[in-house]
Amino acid sequence: SLRGTRGTRVVGSPGAPGQEQMDDHTVADELRATLERDLAEAGVEVIKFELTDLSYAPEIAASMLQKQQAEAMVLARQVVVQSAVQISHDAIVRMKELGHQITPQGEEKIINNLLTVICSDRGSQPVVPLEG
Image (spheres, rainbow, N blue to C red):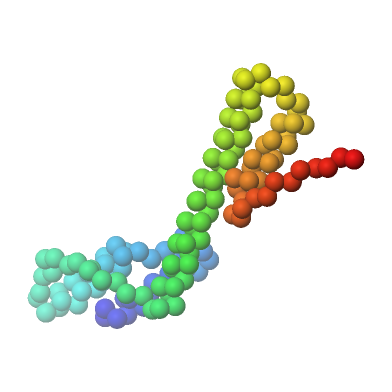
């Protein structure tokens, strides 16, 4: 039956133990196959089948949304980090091109500070060391 088909899929990550990835096309294909098999007994041929709406239980939908949001955050963080590394590199190169003498320790401080400021999700406050 069609109800039996919809209950055989589990929402999960690809490769998760005991779970199979579910998508709209897979569900539609299975529903069509079940429908064709059931209707063939009555001599009915299915010419066209479209799945226009696939609803999930609220807890499943919330879980899927949370997963999508987490994946988006990871991708956004990767972009921020890659950009921060490039900006830090470009800053060191540009300073050297302008004739600034930078020690390896100075480069390390500049890179550390830039990466901290750019990658931080909070505002930064400058800290000035006082020597006395």
